Length: 481
Image 1: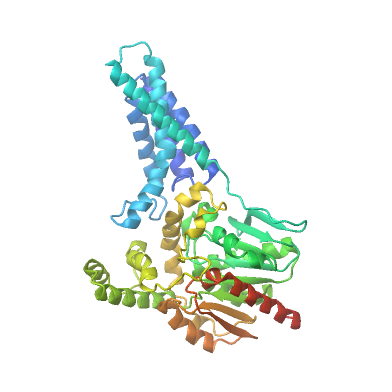
Image 2 (image 1 turned 90 degrees about the horizontal axis):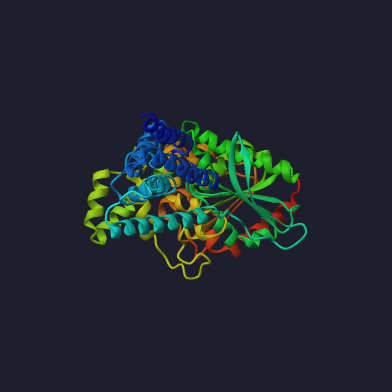
């Protein structure tokens, strides 16, 4: 009885700790390695104390139930009940599936070894069955070791030649949250350019390093992982503190940290898509921190954009005979929606509806996830990419839906430049034009990229570098700004 209570308590106790510590699954290398190690210890203890192979099922089951109980205090698609959709399946595999791989599987295998040591010498059934069990256990153990080694490989960024160069992956404190950032430049004394990426929960570290090398010769380029995205996914919780005001405050806090570190009075700010809205609001709030603002794929009013996306996708679905999609969109009605899964048809089809010839561009197909193969992302970050987007989207996107720059930001106190693709999605382009025409600023300029779309600044990075040369030249002419 004491033994039973002991191993059952250990399994349930570790589940409560894991559910509190890693409710969305292990997100960092440290969390992953500790999860594997502690699960092995608990599983071995359960097998040894129970003296039964049933511990291979009972211990993981107790652990899983305890984890789910602790997950009740956390919100988001990755911890909510499974959802019957394409995104829901990916979230299930990358969330609970990955947690199972790094916790349940090692516990099960260790319980098998623990029980096997106690039962050594006993009759164990037919010899062929014993060999089959041992072979399966051995293969699963080898797979677990390979996964553990792969997970343990840290993110890294290639060096830049030169004594004054800087190339590092690190974190920046923003109001008590540690946000990941990639910092690269050929000269650490060069002007600082902070890049705030687009989609909530997304990461552009790999894409920035691959495509913005031209900027690294002119600036110290700092690519931020916003709270909830990429290496900043662990900073998402508690989600109750994720607000629009907080997201803007994060940009300002990172700006202040960069000013102190690089001893610069002002820096440059580049914002893309959803990050461009945060960038505009940060510049409006604290114009004295910035030399200029550069917008790319500029957002203006997310709710109005989504309604245009909805209408265009519905019309495209009818024209192409996609009856199932027509039924889905008709049943949903126009946005805004209450939950992130209702936006799934828009997320899945908007790139297809607004497709164009990408062959002339550095990004090829224009895939926003193409940069995830870069070394700046760990295996865990790659596995959690959709979970990070949906978890962050579900709490931040509703907070951004009431923003309309046409109403809220009629003027900015710094020079502004916009790099827009000629193939920008209509849901963004149609709203950007009237805002840009009405916007008042000390200086403003619109640069259209003929072969670019929503990611024109990455698709045609040479054009962006040319624009930034113009920005630097203009600043040299008017140094007081």
